[in-house]
Length: 212
Image (cartoon, rainbow, N blue to C red; front, side, top):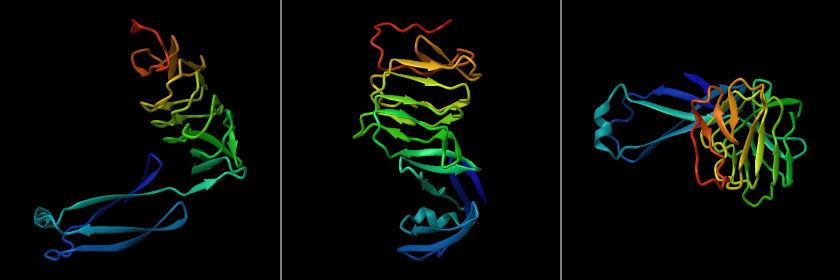
């Protein structure tokens, strides 16, 4: 059973009783096809836990394989495809003022994966997001020395901790036409203002008031 969930291909497989009574590591490979490409995944078992032997039929295992990643023609981005759209998995460049393009290799950019833009050994001071961006995963922008960022109207999903370690970030702006999020005093909230999604951790305010 292969299905797509959060960039990963999950394989759910009923194992049952495999080499019951044997010892040592056992392994085999499973070939499968995904995104019209051939893949192989190696499964390993170590029969050292006696409780595991007692389970018999009905043991289940879950394994996953990452989708194929590509490097953009300009060499600045690593990305994966969702249909014909692109999600950035890692920024390879060294620009100070980073403008993420709306399209990479003719694929519309709709997502930023975890740690897509990280600041280690980089001197990124500003980031402009693509106009059609739809989602940002946990830690999508991390440890970057930016003071502000603007989210486009197209954003539909932002995971908690999206700006992990951005210690200078003091102003998160949101396009007024965005139907899912809004900004209050530079902090990111859901549109109904009931949930604080991200506090701008670079703020130096001594007091924080929850909107009524």
